[in-house]
Figure 1 (tube, protein in one colour):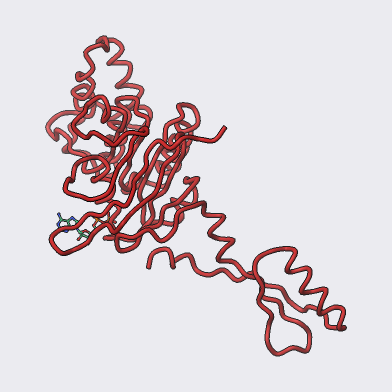
Figure 2 (tube, helix red, strand yellow):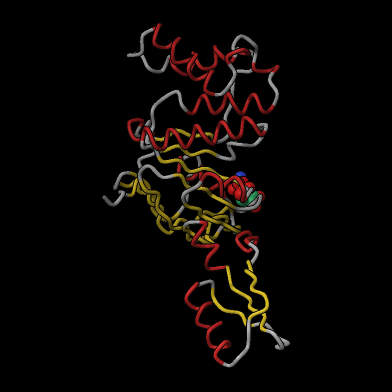
Length: 281
Ligand code: ADP
């Protein structure tokens, strides 16, 4: 069955004064998808996320959530979206107290269920041993873990995560990737995360949206993009110049056969890969 669009952004433009930060951005996010928003620092990723979340207003274009124009003032709509963007903590409270405070917003949750949920969240991000330490004593990586725990205090349909791996050590990063994949599959949640690291996006995302200077450069899967960017370079015996053809098996075979029929044998076949850095410029 074709997946439905959960979020659609149509012709979104956002400026500060004369400075256009987001320029006619359009894309959609399907249900239960993991989408990487890729771009170098200053590309506009945070601005895009904040605009979707209603943290920045005065934009042109449309943001459609579950087939309706998003109503940022409506808590029942915004409760469907959880985010890790500009997270703040109560630094003088412990990790446990910070999560407890957030969960108090759900009066239907019993005290016992709340305690259980806090411990689940702390375990999920590997902070259970530090639960009674004040946040002000936490390292940047520990704060990032706590921020991720906060994202999961309520069950949302869409998670918007701004640079979720920053500050995590390699083990923490791998655990977090596995966790995000797991909740996408098991709970059918859609996750949009930003990164300036192609590797992070490549590992995790089903689809990427590459953004540079406020414009979308590419939307689609990374493998499609790699195939578009790939070419075969064939060196034939006795020829001074190689032959370059598109990255398609049939075309490769046909080219080799054509030369073979003239008695010319291939010497070396290489795969040329146009650097993906193009996504960033
Ligand atoms: P990214 O998240 O990709 O690093 P940002 O969305 O933070 O990029 O920033 C995109 C651009 O918008 C940058 O040029 C930045 O300087 C500019 N910008 C961000 N916030 C403001 C603001 N409040 N006022 C003016 N310019 C801003």
